[in-house]
Figure 1: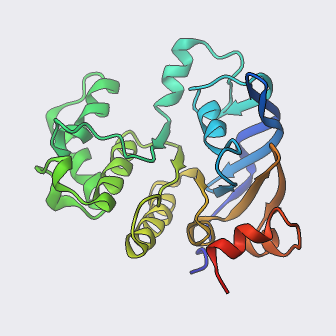
Figure 2: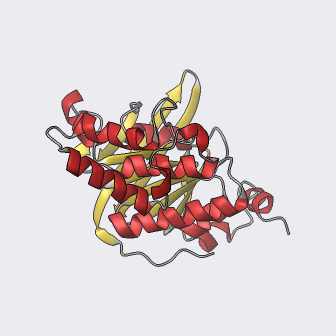
Length: 257
């Protein structure tokens, strides 16, 4: 399934990255990454395991610091941002973790209430209930409100994890392997949800994946991370219109002829 056309403002750069480098000991993961994310865009980052995809979004969210280079997120310079400003910035960024990161001891309702109560001083019970019901409706799981995470399927947990990030109305969404470990039908449902979130909440998103069906279904633009740099950026067809031996096996593995 091809990606529905989105409303993207190419004059509004939400995330700007120039010359980003990151190493762990002697292992150089990112070797001069340049990237722009535009307002309203879903940008998919493709790459093999260990190429630095997750490192990239951790730097964007301030969970890791860059060794070198410029990273500007929603107008904030991540190299000089204060701790207080970083905490405020994170309220504007939704991070969908690979494992959904739900609290097993809390019901779905309590899981969704937690970030709202923690980050919105003076929020009323009426506002909390309205927000919880709204995001559950958005992900199609209103009936799970009183269930425990252990009672949910993997796909449902993934949806609730996304709902929990949406409750703060983020401007940017970061998805880390959103379809990992899910069956093919549920993968398609998550892909559709990512597009619905983009349209309904007007988010700008970076989607980390090695699932090419996810990439083709959700990405307005694709960036392939090769040897620590984005060496191929464009549409899905443009990315894979190549005989590059680093790229073709990636395609063949996902779409066996």
